[in-house]
Length: 476
Image (cartoon, rainbow, N blue to C red; front, side, top):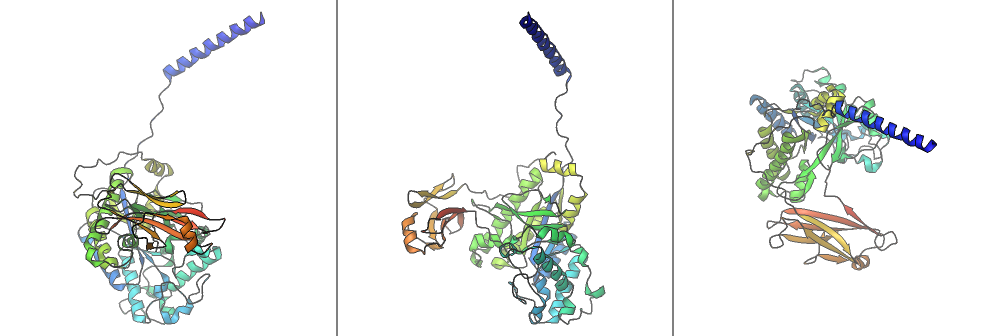
């Protein structure tokens, strides 16, 4: 009787549940789709690192003025090195963390007070024109490798203010007669809110120090792909320069001019190919821009230096690119500081919607107005097969007849070889040393199309291991 009762109750419960579930399903609304937001502008942020070259200061400011007249406004960010406002004769004023007093990896300013006063004039002029002055630190040291702590960062940031805003005092100089600003400066320490570490190299102690000194963002990050910025627990916005496809190759490189210089000509001037390098950079920039502009609207970050690598090919390419995109509908070419102000003005849910792509993308036209150089599908690897390290090539664009494959050991080419024996490496190199093996694919003209690298660590010891390295990223 008890089991029959249980069965009856169970059936009644099941019927009741089924009925109520059906009734709920009939009346329930389907899950709502994420609310779309208005499509954000496409932000393009261009920066220059250094600050020594007076002619380049004038050229960049002149270009900004030209763009303004053409109704294609652009504002640059200048990450300025503090030691360029301290003469070599007065170098002992600077005491770098974990290095000898009076030492800098990039030297110091000229022993000419007039030139330093002229450089301050360039800072003032750029600031008054709406461009941004930001910090690249002082002596260009690798803080990550040196292991800088909070005290080191505090010292470097304080000394940056002392060098930049103490240029006249430290060098016993006078402002130029045309400089009518109080104390010789059109801006103050509080106006410097951005930082980029030399070599893009930081330690965790940097960010509390940036907050303590009034900074709002750090642009020292790097990423494998373009990404939206994040704000850390200290309230510091963290920006990453991405790796992008080098147009016409299968490679990705960090999107800074020095990396193009390194990838295209191994950081050696090759003026015979200047125009090829210029076009390749412009195509790379346009490909990167269009992916964002007709896609997720992730910010476009481009980094250059106060240098004219490869005969100014990259400065020319940047001007070509800027003329093409700044002034387009929904595009804003602004400084990091202005971009930070825009980000900080957003509601949290709006920024989340942008990152999630909850907006209608701009339809991509069939004709982009230029012929983009397609990234080649060339796959290259170095694989351990038995006791041999062998080059493995693949990809739909790899052509053995027209492309050359090189194998290098510690930078030296092994002629007509596509493999190297580990036993041979152990015999030729000191036990415990590290040996780099690299494979390179070149086109007919000798342009590097793809590269693979690994290191044999602790050769000939029980700790020997193979470590694959990521693509060449020359950071400066």
